Image (cartoon, rainbow, N blue to C red):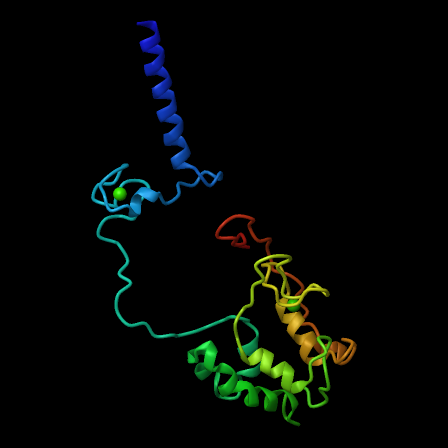
Length: 213
Ligand SMILES: [Ca+2]
Ligand SMILES: [Ca+2]
């Protein structure tokens, strides 16, 4: 009898631990979405199949991903359209899919960079070693590259565009590439925007937002 009671007690403790683990798998006190919410059967604390309860999407509020989608914006490299898309084609740039961007915009970027009315008529090469055509070809493909291994950085002086860390000053990096010349020393008044960091520190956990200030 005693063994039977111990078995019941052990089972109850195990069930409790399993329940707690499911409630807080992300280690920061937040309930997370359960696998049972997508398994097609009524289980866990769901009130209907795969919805309701404390862990699944509320019933009746499941997002419908059907229909036809239209691209409204893109921001692979957030500063590029800001710097180069100011001559009447910002919206067009935002609506163009990445595979068509180079054909559509590289020449316009080149003009915007090197024309006498452009950003830097004296551009020769930059710290990346890219001439104007190479540089505008790179920028006109507005996607954020991400290396699957190694350091994630927009530019740390060694690695280039292997991703982007939240705290990185990508605006200053781009200004340096546009105005700094081959060794970064040209146009010193134009190679940073005077804003070295965000006003508040970014969180280290999802969704990585900074506190309001
Ligand atoms: Ca379910
Ligand atoms: Ca800055």
